Image 1 (cartoon, rainbow, N blue to C red):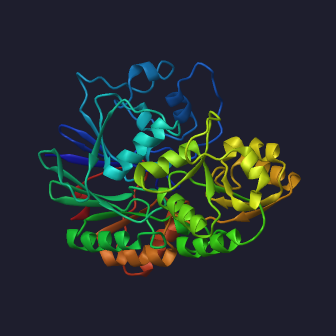
Image 2: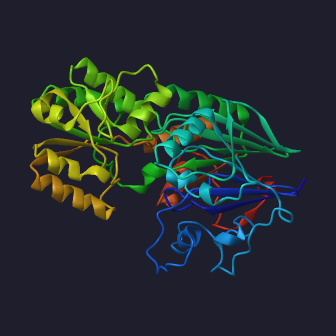
Image 3: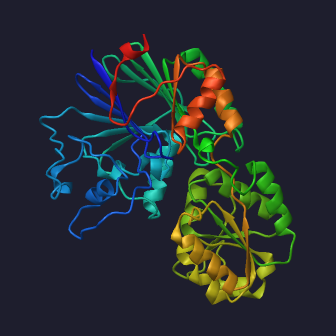
Length: 429
């Protein structure tokens, strides 16, 4: 069975990673996300897909998207189920930069992801945090072996990251072994998952390791905490202050949401959650005791209302997403605002300045309580060394050259390819 490999995007960006393996009978993609893109002209008659392609958030892929999404893009050949090869996709985790383009795939496509990612996707769609997907979505257990074609096999193994269900992707294609690290770290709630994956990867003996290199994008570490454990200790200390506390955590990091809730409960100062956040926690931890701010104003067991918070602000912690920033104005309570990787995600987002200005005007002190979802530079190099692939490709970083040079400095053989360039297993002989 002949096979061609193409990295369509993600080499010199953080996210937007798409690797294709094109065989005689199927087209298989590892991750299918959106990158940040570039400002571009817009047209109201463009489809969402055309808009993402025009902004370079998604590459121009032929025979992948259906014609009704390409009415104004005659230079992109549409997918036709009766003519084109079946589309198969493996997703490492549910961050937009790795799965944001799934909504554009035809119904006949098959998407494989971890069982926890499947549950998270269902819940995100239910609470309106993610759009529905037309394609078939197939959950896999850790290590479950799936035969995608006669000689194309897939396995997913969990890793530690800042979203539940994150996995590394193991592929065997006619004896050629590819490992996509996904996004990973050793500083979260389950660092043992990353270590276990590395042990399995060493035994796997990959020919090509696609290694994320986010940390090499920055000369200095970002502000925030080095680990989730250190952040939780600081959060516990903040709970013991009399200030009105507001937190803005990233909703897909369900493990963190649960840990925050438990630390606050132990400090006798429970978090009041927006309903979508509460549903995300309950989907994975149904036994967790939660206080909820009801969207419809109906009193139920575990509900807390604005009047309760106003009357005793130092008895609660309010979880408040950026979409509901105006609620803080309605409360008219100064306090401390802890930003835990929620939206806006950073100062590259224009909304970040808006948030800062609002908080300052309302008498809130801003504290960055973020924790990176990515391994440190030292850990990335150590992981790549421990896996010991025949060749390692640096991607998912703004500085692939720096990362590649660091890998080579550790004695590792690296592989370099341009976006859209075809390579084969013979290039590794």
